Every structure is written in structure tokens, then in C-alpha cells.
Image 1 (cartoon, rainbow, N blue to C red):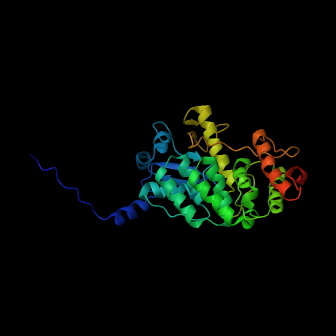
Image 2 (spheres, rainbow, N blue to C red):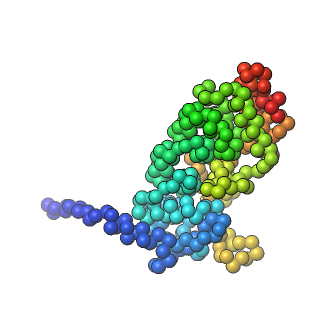
Length: 306
């Protein structure tokens, strides 16, 4: 009987280093992406992306020319995804990890998603927690949502004063209001809810403004909602010409299901201050959750706060 042989392995580090040198390297590349609103060119290799990720296998099928426009993905997050696909490792940063996580979920990269989740938990702080909560609620990441709620409960006063709290959707705000472990008195909680409603009433839309360091969580989730809506309308992936036959080349649009059926959460307000497109059930639940607390705080109810 013939000996089946023995698999021997060389050192992984030089192999990983060599592949990392190919990330965004135009030499020998055969595909170009135009990424983000800044329209940054990113170079890659079809065969490597296709064998590592089903999303790219579908996207880069026969007949899809270059460049491929991915305007909703930030360049930094996209490059991090490429680094992971080429080397099976990635350097994460607190200011951009939520965008990398969002992209990993959209592209179906489970291992990268888990790495991002572990990193988020390690670096979770007052400024990041509400943004992480919004992403967790949108994508159905239950374990991350629990960690975020627990962190907010332990650091309630600081968390309720952050911009991230004011940018929460109604769906993400509800579990915070319903918690009985918040380290804040009832009057402060009602005031926080009033501030949340005031900011939403002024902006009236999702994700227009941007923080200096990262996209606001609603903008991340708007991107996810757009992806899922394209799935519903196209049934997968399609390539269409830009408006008016633009010379920027074909635009590849992608659509695929998100875990938990992620949708853009409706931003709802109590009666009299509802946002455009507010969900009636969320509107009622937010009013009820905060009204009950306000009643215990000497009658300062949510309805009177508006």
C-alpha cells in the first residue's frame, strides 16, 4: 500500500507578509474598486477575493468590468477587509472598527465579524457604547447588545450625555429606557429622552451629519438598510451604467440578506413630535417606557417634556 505522505508546513509569517504586500497594489492586479464617497481607487486580485469570500465571488463573476463602484463602503473599512482576506489577520482601530464590523456582516465574513466583536468589547467606552449598541440592534448581534446595555447601566450618566445616545434609533433606545439597572435618577432619564427627541426633530433624517472620527451609527445602519433593500428589488447583484452614460464606468450594486433581517429602524417620537416615517408601535412604547418613569419622578412625564 502506498504511503499517503506527510504534510509539512513552512513558516506562516513570511507568507502572510508577502500577501500583505499585494493589498491595494496595482502591480499584477486585475480589478479596481472605486470606494467610498471620496471615490478612492483600491486595487485587488479577482481570484483571491473570489476564493475567500462568496460576496466577491458573485460580484466579480464573468462580464463584470473594472472599475467596480462601492460608494457606500468607507475606504478604511474596505482596506481592512482586504487585509483580512489576503492575510487572515487585520489591524483594527477603535475609531473605525464599527465600520469594519458592518462591512464584515454585509459581506458574510463570519470570522472577521467575530474578531471585530471581540475587539469592540475590549475597547468599549462611553463614547463608543451607544454607537456599538445601534449596530448590534440593527444586525441582531445579541451578545454585543447585552454587553452594551450592561455598560450603559454601569456608566449611565456619562453614556446618556454622548452624541451617540442622541443618535440612537427608537429600536435601540427602547431597551435602554426599559432597563431597571440604570445608575441615574428618573428626572435625568426623562431629560435624556427629551434631548434625544429634540435632536431627532431638528435633523429629521438619517446620517446626514458626520462626527470627525467615524460615521454616526445611523449612517452605518442606513448603509445596511440600503443593501437589504437592493436585495429585495434586484434579487441579488446587478451591474448598471451610471446616469447618462458616465465615463466613471459601470457601477456594481450589491444586495444580500443581513443576519436578523436588518432594516433601517424607524425613528419614532411621542405624539406631537413624530419624525417622518416614525413607527407607531415604537412611538407608543417609548412614550410608555419613559412616561412610567416620569410619573415616579414626581409627575415629569415624557408627554409633558415635549
